[in-house]
Image 1 (spheres, one colour):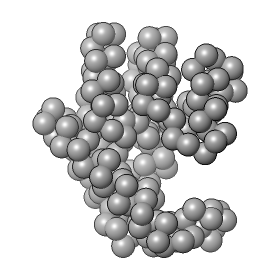
Image 2 (cartoon, one colour):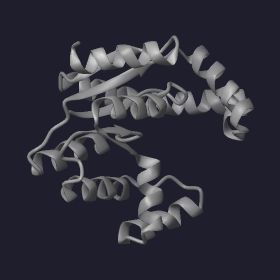
Image 3 (cartoon, one colour):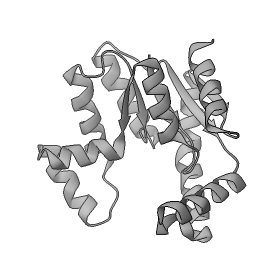
Image 4 (cartoon, one colour):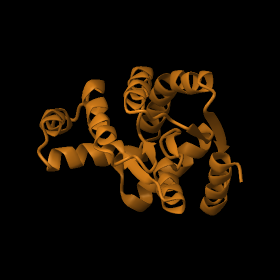
Length: 189
C-alpha cells in the first residue's frame, strides 16, 4: 500500500502516519527527515539542500523530488510507504506520479486529515506551550501558515480527487479514534 497523507499544520499527519505505518508495516517517510538524512549522509542532493536549509529557505521542488526519487529507485519503498509532507504542490504531485510510473508503481490513496482552522489554531497553541515551539505560539503566524497551506494544498486535493484516490478523514477526536478512522479509510475494514 502506497499512501500520501495530507492535512494542515497541526492536523496530526506525522503522529498518524507513524501509527498507521507501524500498524500496517509500512515505511513512514517524512520529507523533513529525508532532507536531514540526505544532509547528514552528505549526498549530492543533501549538500545542495543544506545550503537552502541553513539559510532558512524552502528547499526547491527539484531537490525534494530528487531525494524522493532516490528512495523510490533504491527499492526501499517496494513494500509500501506513507509519504508525510510530500507532495506540497501540484508540480511535486505530478513529478511523484511520473517517478512512480517509471518504477512500475503508483499511489493507492491520498488521505486528507480534515481539521477545521479553529481546531488547528487550538492544537498548535497547545503544542507551543508543551514543546516550546515559538512558530506555533503566535496566532497570526499560525493563520498565515494555514493560508499558505490552503493555497498550496487545495490544488493537490483537487489533483488527487481527479485521480479518484482521495479519501477525506475527520481529524477530530482522540488519537486512537482518528487512527481507527484512517485505517478504515485505507483498508475498507
